Image (tube, rainbow, N blue to C red; front, side, top):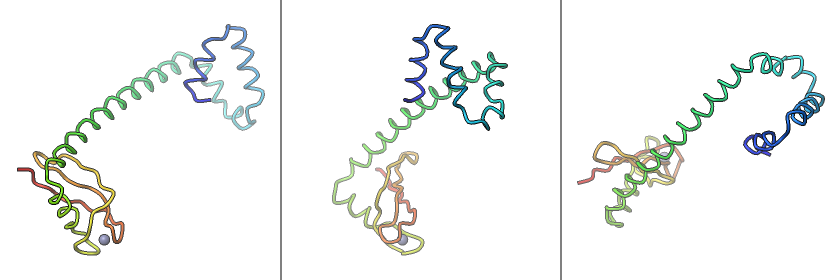
Length: 138
Ligand SMILES: [Zn+2]
């Protein structure tokens, strides 16, 4: 059961059921954890804990939004890459400089914006070293 599922199940409980559940959980907690008094801290600092939870939620939301925004820019960069004819793209992928091997082929690459141009970031087919290729978009 993940945290989200746990929360929704706990929310559905009556207060006395919830209390009993917590007591039962407390009983099976490892001794070291009880000695660390983490649970006691959480109970003692209820409002602080709820605030922390709220901050976690907001952070999660920001992260999700950033992730979606990033995906959109990746998509736009990818579209730029696809405007290049396939044979030219093949040439570019086969003409990447690796600091270890010299000229090599790029593999496992992602496409990113670099101003009006794009950068292909991936690995050298021969030695798996990180390599990148700048591509000018006319
Ligand atoms: Zn290499």
